[in-house]
Image (cartoon, rainbow, N blue to C red):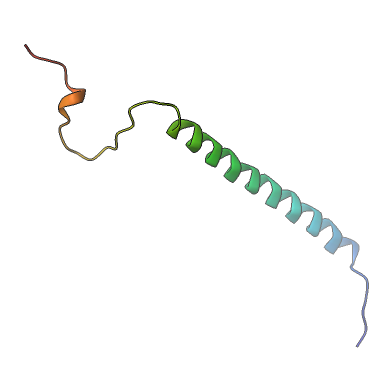
Length: 61
């Protein structure tokens, strides 16, 4: 069985695949970092659950 060196086209594809992987990995890290910062921001985080929350409505009295 012959072991041939990679063709120049394969080398270019490998470089572009590595670059795409780095970009996607960077995006995942960015989203994770934003999520962590929002969770640790000290704000009163509440989910949108289609229910009335008295603490968010203005006092009518």
